[in-house]
Image (cartoon, rainbow, N blue to C red; front, top):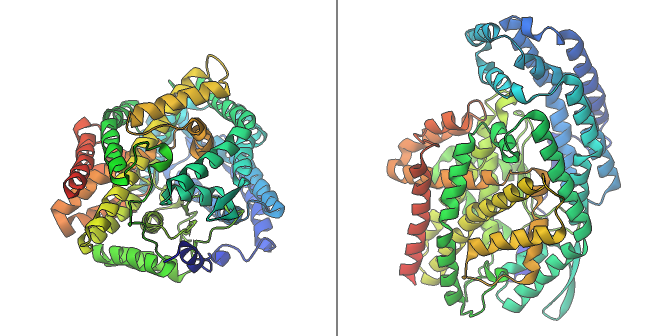
Length: 596
């Protein structure tokens, strides 16, 4: 099948957002913003200065009230940002994004006293609350408020930060997104010059012609080179903003901010980084093998996702959908039915559009609204895995919908549990059914490359972040500083297995997460290695494991990652637990070597 046919097959797969709002002119949108502010102001008048003295029932009512205030606002936020994801050039949508963000900031200022006062409550009062059954559902939230309270500033200082972020760090992040989303590229392919967005151009890394792959990536990064002054300035400001707060709030390091938010110890995350970095030799070993499979004596970073000869299979939308649903149905009927709801309810947006945000994501806002998934479907084998991955996120959200809003969104390190597990279900099903050696080679190489991309590359990004955040305390980082640092991490990860073209020094500037949410990326590695260990447990236990996995998904963020992991018998502090996943990766690599 021609790829253009596959791409066209998904052109009609667009989400229906009517479950949220009828349109930008829906009067409910404006009224939600207005009413949220009024409700937040009333909440402040009712409870400010009284939190520490509230009885258990009153405190429960206050928490319930907060969720009533935030639920419609979260829905408005989701709707506007979903519209923005596919209409990044719309001034009307941008205006609504600004309105919603400003309202959220103002609401946050009205209600921020609540956590601040909780954090200052006497130990004796906290013990009373935590011993009261009527407050049981909120025990974990109260405990977290107390634990993180020592990093709070005064209420007036917190308000200033919320407001200044709108025109400060949040504005820089928005600027980065607007600049990079606007990139368009004129690329010559098969004798025809075509206008492409970043997702389309990056997809050419899977093109069978190395000249196409290399020209595409050279063009892609040249655009970031042209914007280097702006992007470097944006990154420096984000670094400085976070590190200013690190000092003001008393965190031990920039990464500790994310660790504490994730309720994980610095030691656990340090172990994660160390174990992954120690296994870079597997990356080196794999890509030397792939260079032989491709017959390349000069394999470069532009070639690491190249398809094997005669194995560049293309999928249309219907076959992709059927494959993914079959994998879910083989595992568990309820998983299948939840995934099917996403198709039946038109909750997926798949076409590649010029002004559409790149990549893929799953969006969930509140327990009463089913999730939405965005893709840029190109009909490649990787797109099949991506669909399974994002539907895994959706299934996770459907299970955690049993929780109140405060616990609905999965804690970040466990957010990849269902998504990565779903990918592995798909891979195993396809491998079992496939008898063709070349096709099996393609499946194994894709799986290993996904693992390296989700674990080892994210680990590299995170280590780059740690280094840049450490250095920003001493000096502003020049473009050359950032490029040189990044090249060093590339060479450490890939060793002598591939050549690093000069343009790849700009890759750091194309990674949205390090701009939008510092240290977010290690959660991908955390989740990936965690799930590989859990998947082995599933293969050992069979159907007995499924209820335990569902319980993990149902818990949302109602307990710490360590406590949730205990449900399936995982010890996050055990170095050997993480090494178990590395050994699993090596076994896949050995299978590939034996197949060759």
